[in-house]
Each structure stands twice: as structure tokens, then as C-alpha cells.
Image 1: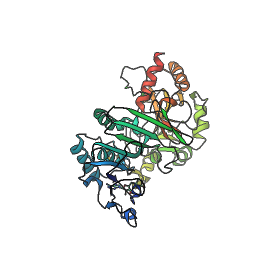
Image 2: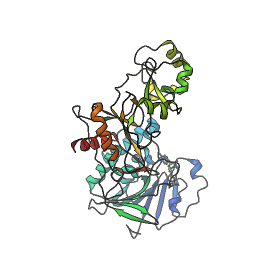
Image 3: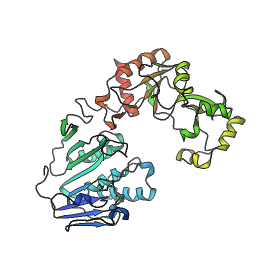
Image 4: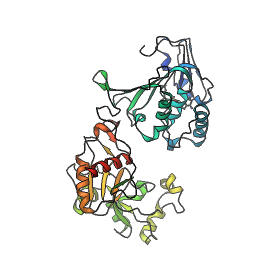
Length: 406
Ligand SMILES: C[S@@+](CC[C@H](N)C(=O)[O-])C[C@H]1O[C@@H](n2cnc3c(N)ncnc32)[C@H](O)[C@@H]1O
């Protein structure tokens, strides 16, 4: 074994059928599993046991190794009671106050770190993106502050087909305290060490913060509450008798339909790639009192379709203030060497994963969008899943600041 010659006690939180006890040499394995469908019928070696209880009720703190493949549940889907309980355990054990943005596996990661003794080892299957995403900052800072060594093996993209994320096997060695972080990427049958987390020679793109006086500021696309309800196709709009301008405004929810060479969203490109292509491209214009037709549509929306956190938090489930239209659209997800950036010549709105760049005039927007399209960013962004890379808004802000300086 690469990290330890002898392993005494092993803990596995979210153990399933205890399959991690099937191989390897250790003295005693204890798995925690809540789902009877998983632990029923498990066949374990004599030195292994499964405890049918929530992992966060464990009092064990001194395992040699904590191994696991924790559940992948997004923060929005975590039951409130569960989150509070897990957050309390993490706080009591580590002093870290996790933000509401943390996904389930982050709580399990902290639990694992605090369930091993101070020369212990943690080996978990978790999303690769933890090495760079702002939402995992508390974890990275905690590990860095202790000086533990970290080795992250990026798994081939298809390892977990169902979960749309690139997975890793992350090993934290609490005994070796050089504070080193090593990244490995699959090349054929072997793992090759790379210098930086993005799996290349370049450093991960930093996260900048746009100031109000910045000449170009990236903002997240609007989340109206449900694209199905608030963003209509041309055919839906026409059938409902909704008028452009009065009832709906042009918007883009994705730049994917546009060819890579497209530099400007003009009326003609909007018509060809969105309106006539049957895409959802009309955002409900609900800032002022709705027209008779729009009101009739809103009244016809089934309650289950508007049962989203955004809609239920509003006084009127459908009412929101229309944001300003950006000068440039930038795709936050991309597959090639760089991302798409398109000048917004028709005053359309950015929705969902399309980022809007605000500030530049129409004339300077063309130059900025061109530099953005030509920028090589793939080597500086951690892969998200199946070759897809994702830019955070503040990474786009730091890109913009660099491109404008040049
Ligand atoms: C991704 S599965 C991994 C199972 C197994 N280790 C494997 O690799 O096949 C995560 C497991 O965590 C379990 N789980 C979820 N929440 C839990 C909790 N609070 N305590 C213990 N187990 C939990 C789930 O039921 C599920 O079996």
C-alpha cells in the first residue's frame, strides 16, 4: 500500500453493502449505512460490521483510515433537519461553520477528517471540482491550515455515468505534514501527475470580483423561477396571444445553438437559431401589471409547475424585476479550448447558465467579445464532467479584467 504498510481500524460512512471491506488488509472495518435496501443481504468478512445508523451519530474519532464514497446530494435537495444536524456535528468536531451551499459529500468529508486520529488517512470518492470551486473553500482552507498532504486522482469522465460531475479519489494524509497537494490525471491506463489542478501546466483561473466601477462586469443569468413557466417558445407565445415587448422580451438560455463563428446576436441570428428553431426564447415581461392575455396564461399555470423556492418566496409567485440587458453574452459551460462570447445587439436578456457582461458600449463590446472567444481557457479550468468545463462568474470577471488590460 502506497500510504501505509499496516491499517488497524477502518471507518466507512455511507457504506452501502460494505463493499470496501471486501478487499485490502485491515484489523477491523466499521461501516455506517442508513438504507436497509443497501445493507440487507450484505456479505461481510468476519472482521467487518455494518451499523444501521446515520453516520453523523458516530462518536468514533480515532480510526487509522476513513474510506468512503459519500452520497452526492446537492445542497438544494438536502432536508433541512439533516443539514442542521450534520452542520452541528461538523461545527463541534472541527470548528468550521459550513455554508448552506455545501453538498452532502462535504459534510461527510469533514466527518471523515475528524474521525481519524492525527496520523490517520482519509480516502474518499468525491467530485474532482472540490479542488477549485468556491463552494469547497472551507474544506481546502481547513486542510491547508493543518498542513496535511493531499493527493487527488481525477477519474476518467465516465466513471459515474449518472452523476453529472467528474469524480476523484482524494487522499488526505494527516501524518505527512508537508502541506503538499498533488494532482493526477488519467492518461490511458496510468495516472500522470500534473502540476496544477486543471490537469495541465497552467494555474486554475483565479476568481476575481468585479467592482461597480469596472468597465465590464459579469453577472449570472436571471433565474426567473422555472424556465418551463417563464421562458416560452415562439409557438407557445403565438398560441397564447402574447405580444413581443408588452408581454414577453427576447432572451437566451444557452449559446449552444449558435455556431462557434457567430460574433453577434442580431435580429436575424435570433430568428434563425432561437425563434424559428423552436427554442425557449421569450421571457415573460411581468415587471408591470400583466395584460389580459398574460394574466390568463399566469392563471393557467398548474401549481406544481410553480412550486419552486424562487416562486414561493415571492409575494406574487410570478412577479420579479426585469434586470438590465447585458452588452455581451458568455457561455459558462464549454467543451473546446475556450468559451463562446457574443455581442448582444438586440437587447435580449441573459437567463440561466448564460452569463451577461454589463458595462461595455456596443462598439467596445465587439472587441471584448472577440478577445474572450479567442482566449484559451480550457487548461485553466477544472473539468466538470464528460469534457464539459464550467466557468464561475468570478472567473469570467477575472478573465474580463485581464483581457481589457491587454
Ligand atoms: C454513493 S453510496 C456509496 C455506497 C458504497 N460505499 C459504494 O461505494 O457502493 C452512498 C451511501 O451513503 C448512504 N447514506 C446516505 N446518507 C447517510 C447517512 N446519513 N448515514 C449513513 N449512510 C448514509 C446511502 O444510503 C448510500 O448507500
